[in-house]
Each structure stands twice: as structure tokens, then as C-alpha cells.
Image (tube, rainbow, N blue to C red; front, side, top):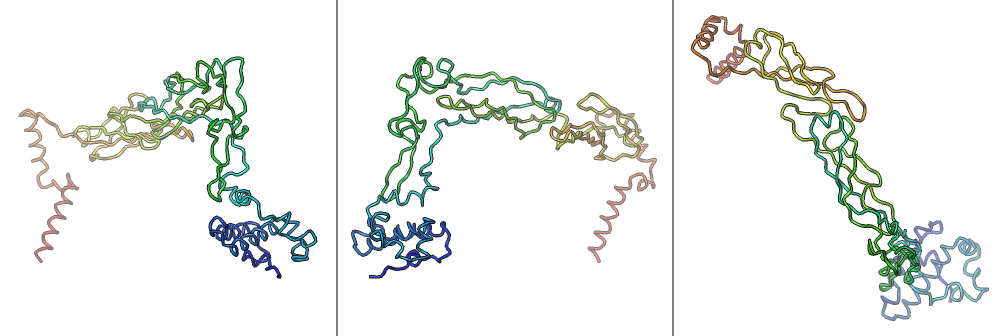
Length: 376
């Protein structure tokens, strides 16, 4: 009986790539495998045909011969069903190259698992964040065991190669027609077994300890910034490299200043007289006191920019500004004479009140127009 064309068996074109062929094979092999077809002889024969086509078309030399001579290329050696394409191969081996990328087949797991990274939350005042400083922190973590130098084995002995996985750190587990690689249960993936463990670390190669570290905080850091200390995280098992420590910065609220990027903002109360007549006031900065000129007739909420009095960027080095918002403070606890003077001031404006209070005059003119329009 003539054989069906291998490309037709897999349902692919003659110029199909290896990836397309593997995908087609996986789909058909799962459909026709004997484990799923309950001993149906016809379907088992179909499975062997699919497997045979796959093995030829994924071998560059065999595929070249097949494309040139067809099935006759293999009949001289007793047919493709014998020797090179034997039907008794283990299904897990057949699928090894198809599912290798999924389950890591044939890949050797690293024996040394790097230690975990750690995070430390550091609260800073605004002054310390802006100027920078060096702080000491205490971090509870795992450190490398000194008596065994991180190996986990007692002095004078050495770890031995795991007899279960032969040092690979992984073992192959069969589940139906899948071959899945898992971490070796004997050595837990390290590839080694310690028969005579260290008395200090009990074979782990590391011990718990609180480390005291000095951290240099660069000037200009802000909430959310992270400082990475390489190798200061948890030590790995059995001498593996340590992870990193990330210091997470959080800047506390300040009673005077609010930070926005590289700029600082603050509210400065001024007297009614200073706002009206103008004058020079003293304002706070992170470098000390500074003088600010307030022009006459300043309104509450007016912003004044003091250049270069903000924060120096930790990344670009650019320096922000200090933005001062003046807020007119209404006088309180007035004595009788002060009240009289204010009444005299109000009366002195008389019919010129609109000239002296343009915003109020404009507001009330707008209100009057609004109600006039309603009555039309």
C-alpha cells in the first residue's frame, strides 16, 4: 500500500518551517496517541505515521532526501518503520524537543540560587532629603555563615553530588504522556547533598543576623526614590551570591514648606498695611532667612518667586525655586482707637470706594447685572 505524503500527513505546506511542523505534530500526536485512543489499532497506526513524518521533516538531511526521492529514499534500509523510526520509542522522549521550551527539558538548573532582595523604608526630614546625609540603618537578614564559609558543610568536609539528580538539580517526572522537569526533592535544586552539616548554620550556609549599614543619602532625594546597595540583601543558600538591598525613601511633611519636584512652596502672612502700602518682609528658606519686597496694593494669594532657593535635583543638578504665597491677615483683638481708625479709613473712601476696591466693585456690578437680566 502506498504511503501518504509526509507533508499531507502533518497538514503543512512543503515550505513549512520547523516551528510550524512541530506545532502540527504536537496537535496530531496528542489526538492519536495510544494512551488517549484506548488501543484502537487504526488510530495507533495513524500515530506512528504522524511520528514518522515528523522525524523526517525535522531532520534537515532526511528532509532533503525525502524532497528529492520521496519515500524511496528510506526503503533501502528496510522501510521507515524500522530502525530510524521505530514505533516503540518512549512518548516522553518524542515530545522532549517539542515541549523543551515549556518545561526546560535538557537544561541544567543553576546550583546556586541568588539570595532574595530586601527593601528598607527610610523616613527623612525635608531638610535631610534636600541636603543629603549619611545614616546608619539596622537590617535583619540572612548572612553567609563564617565557620563553613557559606558551603553548609562542617570544616574538613565537602558537599557531595546528589545521587538522585546527579548534580543537575532537577528530575524528570512522567505524567501520562508529558515529561515534566521538577526541582529535585533530595537536594532541593542545589545539585549537592551535605552529609556532615555545619553546626552553626545546620547546612544552610547562612545564619540570621542584624546588620548595621551606613547609607549615603544623596542631596535632593524625594519620596519614592530608591537607593540600591548591591550585595547587601539576603545571602544565598550554600554559598550562593547575596541579593541587593533597596532603601525606599519617604520624606515627612514639613510644617512650613511643601515640595513639588524641585520647587518649594510656602504661605507667608502679611499685614493689611504692608499689603496696601508695600514693604519688605522676612521669609524662611532652607538656607535661613531672606528678605522679600512686597509691592504696594498686593492682593492676598499673590505669588512671589525666589529663584535658586528650592531643591537641587538629584538627577540633573538643576536647582528649583521657592514660591512664596502672601496671605493678608485680618487684624484681631482691636482696641477702640484702632477700630475708630479703620472706620475713618472706610468713611474716607466714600464715593471712591470702587476706585480703592476694584475687585469688590467689579463683583457687585456683575451681581447687579445678573439680577437685572433675570427680571427682564
